Amino acid sequence: MTMIMTKIKQEKGFTLVELMVGMLLGLILIAGVFTVYLSTKKTNNTAEGVIGAQSDAQLALSFMKEDIARAGWVNNSSITYTMNSPLPADYKTYEGGAGIDMLKIHYESCDSSQAINECIGAAIDSADCNGVAVTPGDTITNVYEVNGGVLTCNDQPLISNVEDFQVLFGELNGSSLNYVTADNITNVSNIRSIRFGLLLTSEKNTSDSNISRNINLLGKDISVNDKKLHLKYETTVVIHNRPSGI
Image 1 (cartoon, rainbow, N blue to C red):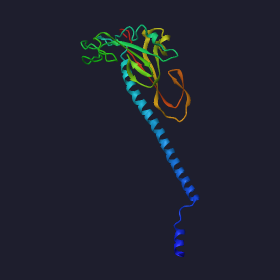
Image 2 (spheres, one colour):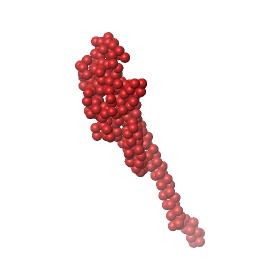
Image 3 (cartoon, rainbow, N blue to C red):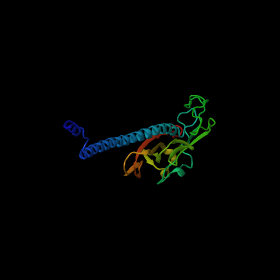
Image 4 (cartoon, rainbow, N blue to C red):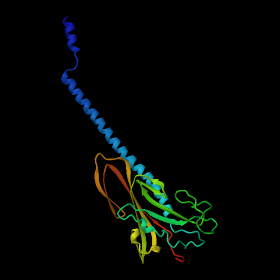
């Protein structure tokens, strides 16, 4: 009987204190794992936001730079000849002022029959950015603007999550090249380059709380206060705007 009682005492379970200590240690472990999970998720969201925004931006910027560089180009055997203006007559209506800007450019559709006009062959640069064919020698007009957070060209979506789009024009004044807004251009025939900037935002939140900051995009201060990632891109493109003989 004594041996049985001793065995029972040896096989007794955990005490209440031991159980509480075990539970506490378990909760600490779970909290640690959860913290690591949240941190990893936040890092992944940030990485996804950066990669996604950068990928979209690079594609859009590459397309825009190539297209805008054609502004003012014409089909002519003389490489020094361009349109009187690479910007349509109503360019000032596309100045956004304090708001989001728009950009309107035009150039001739490629005519491969010309001996020297940078046309490699038929159907090269013979359509607008919406894919609409333009008869060789006629004018292609492309309009860049933001609609509902999407940058479009002739209503063709280029990139989403666009918060702002700003445009400046490099106007030659003597030996000085000054970048001005469309409503401050004094002589459109002196425009030598176009500088544009995009402010993109990530789709997902990358912060646990709102972050208030100011972002300067081509001289315009933009205030943001949210949990998202914001990426700024600015670039300058030289355009075809040289009078004959220059």
